[in-house]
Length: 267
Image (spheres, rainbow, N blue to C red):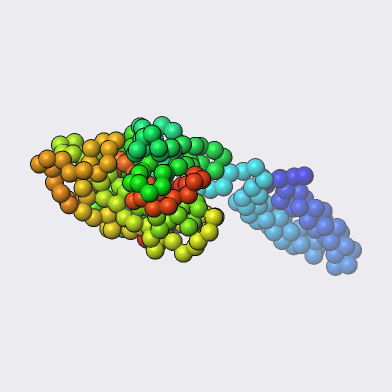
């Protein structure tokens, strides 16, 4: 099939043939004198059309790339997800995605508490078996700290918990790892943090502003004040590096407790 200017030139050749036939008809009807004027007029129209055809752009082929958007259409509007607000305060900050994000994990008491870190098709899952009627916890230490300094008030800790009924028996803790002082832990009870009960999954949401009055801790031990250490100090939000799931000694389930989709999520 003809494309480009050849497509238009083909049409003009057909039109020229029609002109010639019309001229012959008019010659017999009006005589030789009329023919000269008609020829001049026809040739003028033909060449004007030919010149115009050369300026008509060829239709784009199906495989031709699209043109780049103009500067106005390419600009990001203030409400666009790529604006400065979203870049500074992302909607989600993942805590653990890959095995390399974990430096170590620990439990207390070691001889009675069990935990497993699992990665499958759906992502990361944290499974714990906590003893009943005694203080216990499972802990994950991140390889790199998460810096929430100056932005933590805009976020909440969010995760999925199973079974849902165990939430009132647990607390969740965040610990910092400052370079020049002892780490400190702040924990928040999960009682009243969920809207479902039963054996299935439930979602837990805790605003980060509620992690207050952090207590100095010794690594891999129960929270305990160290001599000369700060008591009730704020968390250092520039270096959040540990998360704990804590039982204060209730009747925790004999089966495993599972946690998924750990993240800091913007309000």
